[in-house]
Image 1 (spheres, rainbow, N blue to C red):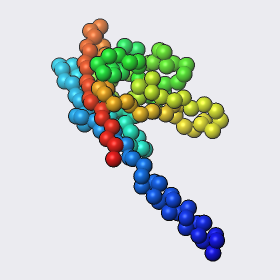
Image 2 (cartoon, one colour):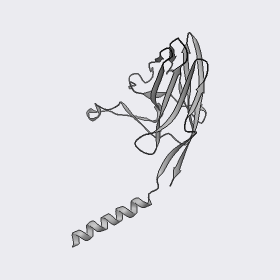
Image 3 (cartoon, rainbow, N blue to C red):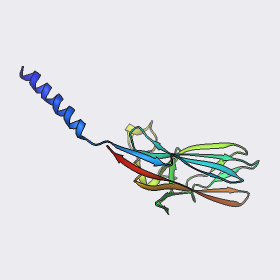
Image 4 (cartoon, rainbow, N blue to C red):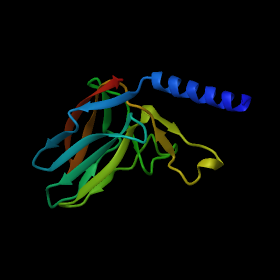
Length: 172
């Protein structure tokens, strides 16, 4: 009987304590931002990971021309509250190439889609337990305005576009 009472008491304590913890949910307004010009169209969409927080963004770029388009990741910046706040990390980025990320080429009339995270909000995964996992994990984006200054080149011409969303954390 004592064991039953102890288990039941633990169950009740867990039930009531978990019911009191507030839930935090990250919300983007608008849900995405887009840019459109004669050379390309782009869409910047905040993404929620396995939790309720926004830690990544989906960038989709459609080349409208018959010439290759280069995304310059060295010049592209994460924007926080309208100011530059570092670069982006994405699949293929390691601690060795983080300061000189390779450019992406969008083929003529092609589309590139990439999941990106602000470098200043990632945690590197190290050690033997992480060999089969991505090199980093994304942390939560803070409240405020988050965006991208996308820098694209074509035929020696540089094109810059800003896309910004407002992130709020709803506590329930």
